[in-house]
Amino acid sequence: MLFDDIEFGPYDKAEHMAQKAFELYEDGKMPQALSQLDSALDINPCNSSWHFNKALTLDGMNKFDDAIHEYELALELSPDDLEILNSLAVDYTRTGQYDLAIDTFEHIQQLDSEFEPCYCNRIITYAEMDQHDLAEQMFYLAQQIQPDCPLCYYNIGNSLFIRGQYKKAIHCWLKTAELEPTHPQINYRIAQACWSDGDLRRAHEHFLAELRTNPGDVDAIFDFGLFLLEVDDIEAAKEKFNRILELNPDFAPAFFYLGEIAFNNADYAQAVGLFDQALQKDGSLPGPRYRLAQCALSAGKCRQAKAYLASEVKLAPENVDVLLSMASMLLAVGDTDFGINCLLRATDIDSASADAYYYLGLASVLKKRFSEAAEFFSHTLDIKADHLCAFRASAELYLQMGKLADAKKRIDEALGCAGEDSQLKALRRKVRFAQAAHRITDSLGRFSPRLGSYLTSYAAHRACRR
Image 1 (cartoon, one colour):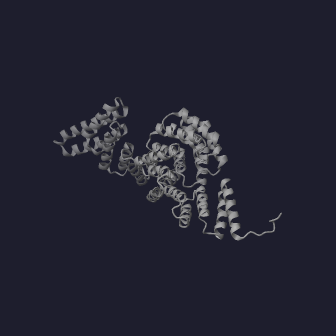
Image 2 (cartoon, rainbow, N blue to C red):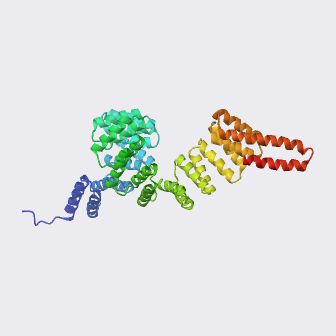
Image 3 (tube, rainbow, N blue to C red):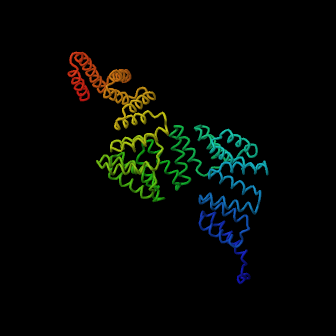
């Protein structure tokens, strides 16, 4: 060929590398594209477009901080480039740098008030800042410029979903799907909103539609598995979690939920194996140690259960029910202080958790802090006036403290709420016996203080044993 023997100069080679990087990027080969761009920029570091393309590639690899650095380098070479500024602002949002994102979007608006993406993308920034009124303002400003922007409908749908306005979110996302049927994960988002709104039939349909379009989307498959668990389609859920492990053998949550299925089927040996596999894949995953502690405790392995619980607590779980369950296990294995720590964390998350205060009362009894326990039981009943366990524990405590009138009052209140209850009736008999014995000792004590003292001790002992 005519040009076969002609050697390209370094800048031509750099251009060729940049073009090759674009092709690799389009094929989804991000690491290879990044390598080509790095080589091109080694030759010519003053090419703004290559820095911009490198930033886009880093975005594709979820390396947003590195991408921000490249966008900033690109801006130094091409100040006030709207596309670079817009992409930079988006990454500021992704990394939680909301003030910088807003400042950058506003700068774009000053440069060109008709640049629609600076309004469209600001919807997400304001939504993540919980400034939803401003998010809606951005939506309407964007609509005046480009009324059929699918991304605008998608972004305002996210704002509506966050606020629990699921039907409106569904409406906006259906509009996105109409304008751009191939919008990433759009059926998945509609499925999530339908699920949250209680429309399980439509949620199921949209999960299936998403997986027909993108059968390898692990996030969508995983959420569909959770959905199937909720609707009690256990075998279908197992199939989804196993499918995830075919696509990604290191996906720890799939092992965990397969373990949950085995645990709920009382197949504890298999459950333990799956929970162990989940921890091998991700040692920071919340949940497996909690379940392993339950399995160990049921097998009488208290020390092992305690070790699992201690490790789980370090992961700072935010689920109040899990914290309460962990606290009850810690109390059972004798680690009262650690149990109290879990309960206090639960009250920090939900100050209206009656069960948390009830268990704090039980823990205080174990530590012989009776007055403190009485206050916790009282607070439990302030929150939940029909908390039967708190009534019983409170009455037992007052009986043990010798506060018979308070014990009787608690039992009467409990019977008013619960009606016939054999435990409460037995407790009432104890209180009546103690009250009768107290009256007798009062009478006899006037004649023989020594006999009265003996009978008081005997009556208290009998009341506690009955």
